Length: 297
Image 1 (cartoon, one colour):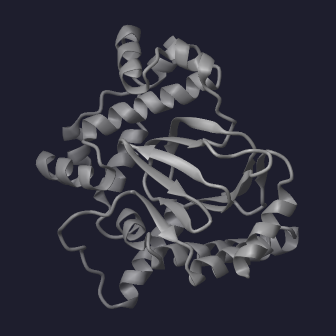
Image 2 (cartoon, helix red, strand yellow; image 1 turned 60 degrees about the vertical axis):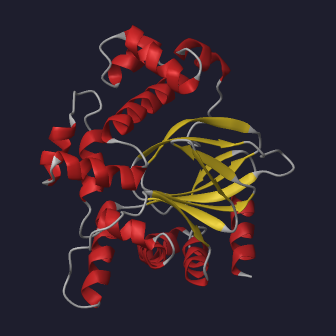
C-alpha cells in the first residue's frame, strides 16, 4: 500500500516530462516520457527510486537495471552511461531522486558504528561497489513515504523535511546498499575520499601517487581497493570521468575544444581519439546524435 501511495504522490506532482523540486533540499521528482539510449553521465552520491518503468546504467560494461522493485544507490561519484530505453508517453519513467548529503550520511554511519560499541576499523577483504541495487524493503518504503508526504506543504517541509530525509538516509544505511554506504561515508572511506580529491581536480594532472598520498595508502593498495569499489583501475576511472564530463558539456552546447580543455586535455586530437574509442563516434558526430534532457542524466 505504501508504494502505491508513493506513486500517487509523484503522479500528482509531475504531470509532464521533466523534473520538479519538492521543497526538501536534494529531493526531486521526475518523469521521462520518451525512449533515450544510454549516454555518458556522472552519478553523484544519490538514491534513485523508480515507481513506474525502468532505468538503465552501464558501468564499465556491466548493465544495472532498476525499477519499482529495486532502488539504485550510488555512494561515490561514478562515470556511467544511463538511459531510459523503454520509456514512452503511455508508460513513462516516474521516480524520485535523492542526493546523499555527505555530512549527514557520515554522522549517521559513525553513529551506527558507535551504537554497537567502540568504532572499529573495517576488516580487510573486498570493498562493496560504489553503485548498488537494493530491494525496496519495508523500512525504506515507509521512510520514503513519510518523506514525500511532507513535500506538498511548505510549513511541513520547512519543519519536518530535514528529519524525514535523515530517516530515509538511515533506512538506506540499514538496507541492502548499507554496506556500500557505510564504507563510503563512515570509517574506512579512503576510496570515496580519493575519488572526491580526483573529481575536484579533473583539469589537473592528478596521478595515482597523488591520490594514494592523499588517503595514506600505498600505490598498490589503492589500485586494488579502487578496482574493487569501482570495477576500474584509477587510471581508467580518471579517463572515464574526464570523457563523461566532457560529453555532458558538449551535449549542453559547449564547443568540443573547450570541453576537452575543461577536463584537462591539452590535445584536442588525443581527446577525439579517446572519445571515439570509448563511445564509437567522434565528439562532433556524437553531439549531433545524442539527446540528454537537462537534469535527467
